[in-house]
Length: 302
Image (cartoon, rainbow, N blue to C red):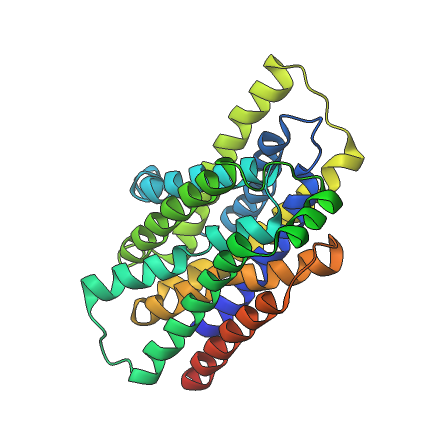
């Protein structure tokens, strides 16, 4: 089941990417990224309450504290990602950010070895990672005219500044460390308890952001502008749930991480369909490479 949980996480997080992008692209709202954190905190808090009071999931301070380093890495990386969405096109930021899957696979292989994985599985992981990285390289070297047309269409004026590289790279490193730490912690924690611990921690962060944005800065929430954020938060929460179960299978964590991180593949497709961001033949070639790798892994899991 780990493979299908990974695919569900991939699809949900690409949906979160899209709606978070829409929700954070208002240049006049400099607190949009904090409002996005608030939205995720609300949705995750509600899901955590359901899991505790209806699902009977056991949670304690010791579980929350044990999972806290992982939660911190994820939450900080996500906040950095939301900030980046205000300045960078989705099809530029997402491939760089999600190179974290390659880093996680390397870390897991370096610490656990290859186990009983057949050589073709390693080839498939390599294809997924190469395809994701190629998307980023394509963005960095694409035709200047195409880049200008993309900027004019989406009003992203920072696409070639240091911000366009720094924020995604920081996200990538933090997310990779979080995923690697998660694969270790889930060896001793129950998946449901770990997920609820993460959601409660995110709820606490969301409350802090709400106090700052609504109480200190006296910002207002305009329902129409918040709808995309809460839609993205729903996808984010669903993706996190599937992600935990995919990664909990420690024997396949090195395969699951690159698949999940390749949600940038779906993101660039959604950005083309819904945000009208132009893509080149090289984009589609990179997407094809990733899809081939995922299909091979799926066939091996059947």
